[in-house]
Length: 424
View: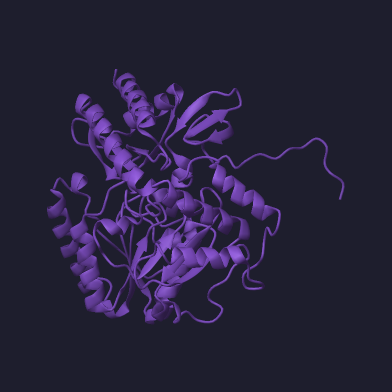
């Protein structure tokens, strides 16, 4: 077929950039545009470039793998990077979780976890929490309540999903413990009125709400979920897509509470920018998956697996989990200082290097306009950030785990100047 000479294609107009940057290259915590202007990247590709942009060890591992085997479809042939990654992940997964299934994206992994939970329990329903984000594909979108933009115009959505209140203390005007107690009571009520325990396969929870506003789950709430899951034979699924691999200052977000999951979902920071995701479960659960229910053309790609192995090496050899905790504390302190000087920021919260600044009007309502303005000005000054929250009034910071004290302090200074200008 002859190529058309005069017509060109364009991206969908629905794809909106969060920043005006046309990236030419990345190095560590920095993005450089085509004019070679340098930006502090505190988006990390939405938490993906965990070891920074183009970490030399990740680049070398990927380049070496590209030269030997790019794609070995894992239900057709097996390849060494996948076997080695599976063995290595066994050393960081929770005790007793020893079986893995690989796909490409967080949404795919969420859907795989739901499929597994339904087959393993013989039950159909899933419980999620208000403000949750689990993905954009149909089943994952049915589990998502972080904003109507994910759900609108595509119904009817998948049935069998019950939504329970999330312990969002700031929004509820409660202490964290009061919010936890309230949300557990409401969950018990939901199990009495909406989804019978005997019909409920799984509870899905993010250890920190992602798109929903960067709200950490109280430890007492996660422990309460574990107790109810055990009591009713429900599987507890930890969606660690954004919180896993050191992001929160511990290897897994649920480690802060000491809560044991039944299924773990991981993606984003797993392979430093290469598409790779997985679900992990004990053999007694994974063995109940039905034949043919797990598969996919690109899952467990050889280059992605090589990059994930290098990512694990960097995280462990460079002490990035501890760095996330230490630099997260430094960043939180700096952001708290900015908030203290500007009452428009009503709350600063998060875990490790996963922090949110919630903008609130004097009457307590969400102030998305000022959040958006501060976010835009920060980019103009050289600091790349993202917004989140159902009303778009939270500005989030998720730098690579390699970030150092000097870079944290520079980001806080830029943020302070951006907020000052936004409210003036």
